[in-house]
Image (cartoon, rainbow, N blue to C red; front, side, top):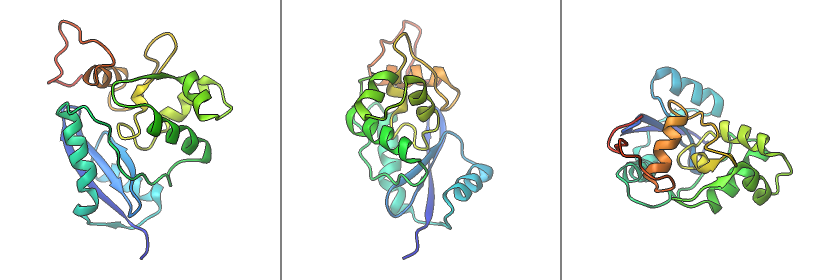
Length: 180
């Protein structure tokens, strides 16, 4: 069987998320859906696009549950094809060792993954994560604050996700039912 890419979407408080999966697992997640996003993803993966709702069902159900506040990690098969060896090493460590509701600093993740690169390079790996939320780069923070976030509309999305998971306290005017 030749490898292929299937797309599915899930509506969340952060908008409609686009998920792409191969036969091996989830390969990408984008914070926006549309013909352009799908075309770029398919080109980047270098795979033909097929319709396969069953392939996407576990990821879409898991993401829907996550946004309903079900406190669990999204343990799904991952297809790392869109990552470099360094990204794969760091992101695999993140995926396997930083559970729901916990955070790790860029420096700590660098040490934990034995990547041999400084914290700034770990931040660049997080910024290039093709599978945010599922591979939870929002759980990686700076030693002196939240750090950055390239997903969705940026740092407010990171703050919202960490509040949802209980890693940050909710402020008095923070409403988890509404997106940043």
